[in-house]
Image (tube, rainbow, N blue to C red; front, side, top):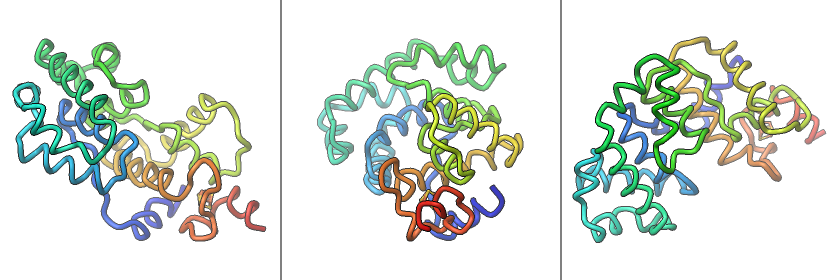
Length: 217
Ligand code: SF4
């Protein structure tokens, strides 16, 4: 993985990272699903301006204001339902941020009940909002890491396990380093190293990517 973060950072420029506040992370996750990063960033600023980045503020925000902030992302009804359900859950469980930044076992249990947070998002929440130094590779990140190492396609669980081991070995247990590099790899997975027909011809990692080189030869 030597040189990978540097090459991606030079290619894509600065990228926004998920917030460290747990409820803000939850909102970020809801608005990031199936959204272009540029649109997600505009919606994020609009929610911040409302304001709607605390459970109470989100609960108080009117449907019209939330619609104006996030409608351009698509899937408004589904996102609104997730934000409403999430803010209610956080209001009922005020100790959630504390539990998630506490011992890992309790943090994992606390996140299980958060509505609309997928298992992959729960692992990211442990890293970004809980401060647990986990190599939180989702399917996209796992795909990039796997291809860089020329691994044949396997089940996604096995690919994720390989990616997590590889990332942990490469980037250690520094939460900031892991978080930054996962943002870069996740962005690359969504923009260039897509599942079908990846853009290997213009990829900044092409020279060091076993799978990409084989594909282009
Ligand atoms: S060269 Fe192709 S397969 Fe390799 S990382 Fe780049 S886009 Fe992905």
